[in-house]
Length: 244
Image 1 (tube, helix red, strand yellow):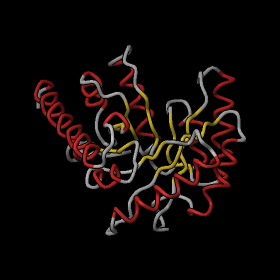
Image 2: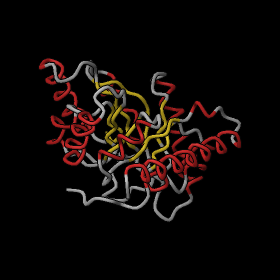
Image 3: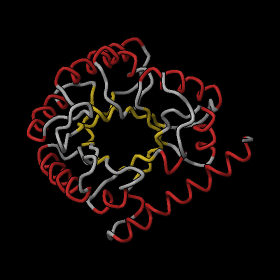
């Protein structure tokens, strides 16, 4: 596929995904500007990110630090003047904290006190070294089914984790993130997340973001207050690369 063909393909997909978000917002009585589209570019090349940026997409997500590091660097070479934000949405090991804070603007998968401390320390060091110019935005990932291997803290652990984040000077609590349980009812899952978010905002008014909804269930997420949907397949198609 030529670059022109791929651009046309991505442009059509982007138009359709944005239309879905628009329809979902209007059905829920919400303003479409309240919901951000986060393009999940895992396994896709930096050239696709560049084309999407040319089409006006400004937020991108990766789920593996090693793949993301190289892709961010390559994208920066391809579009040195582009202003985009990079999100880490996959499970993050503490020993990857130092690397991830060098490229990520946001980490959405914070789910333990030990990871908070690792990110705090890594961010502080990066700021001191000039590798970052601003604190790291973070979201608390909540497990809605307690399934092993998918990440997320228990709902009852959210308040303590949020308090720990806000006590650091290098991390900024922005809200919550979750993935609907496999095979479960997304409406039930996202309603639960909405209630968790509401309680969190009672203690931390700045934590207004709710990252929920993907290609198959974004309408349900928007109906329950999601402020950011994470879309990969519906936007970019099937996987193109093998993740390292």
